[in-house]
Image (cartoon, rainbow, N blue to C red; front, side, top):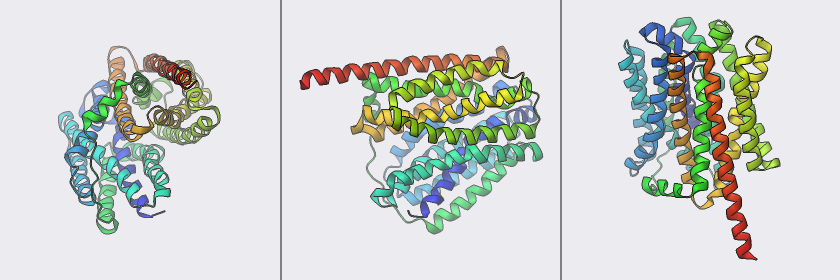
Length: 390
């Protein structure tokens, strides 16, 4: 496989790190800027909303721009966003930095995927796209814990300085080693949205949205949750995040195996149900750190374990518009991150961080309901088709 794919993986790693890092250093940012944890959590919500909305829009607006040039332009804007974050001394300025980084980052991820599929042979395309997405996985496993350690040692701006350095390296790599790639015709946004008229597809996308909403209601505030309920220090929080990340990536692999062996529908329903149980149990497990770790590893594995089955299910539902569904699903996931972060912020402000897991679990139950609706509708369609065939 073309080694330049790994360069694009580094870019996706950096973007993933920027999106997730605030959740780990939430309390450090809040203390330095003298704002509440709930208000600080909006930095996650706004980033995810901008990321979800601006990706398809910017892709359409830049449809005619040569891809290597566009990637470099996007990296420059991304760099500026993170430079502003380092210079930020107020919440408003940091919010501006997050918006700039989110908009450019959303375009960068799409560009990395399209460029990776263009620079390899046809038989390696799926693998190349998978490698690019591994960059985002790696940001969860390595990027966030490293950022946490830097933040605890040198202040919350230190992770952004690391990101600036990695962005500069990415710019140099793209400029020196990537070839020019001409753009392909973009699919109009309205054409993408029209595919949601199918209730099976709409509820499947809603499942992803609600699942991430429930997950981020707690995960977005995991640092204050760990410090409040378990009394962990900054270094121990970093270790917990590392364990979480490793378990999440392992869960993604196991989820793929389960989907192939037991089918996408059974895997989706079972994963969501067990995930909901884990979310509700988490607050009751904090009296014992080992017990909490066991429940957390299960929670972490399931959080990514659903992804292969969900993606496969969307392809089964709409093979003729599979590319569109993957794009819409990416937006649904990030809108879920945004809502979950906002809900988590509200719960902290009105009640306490100890309630976040329970509230998040309620959204997971809603996700289970939409999944059941989509799958039952799918079976109805299949039965109609079978009757017509007979």
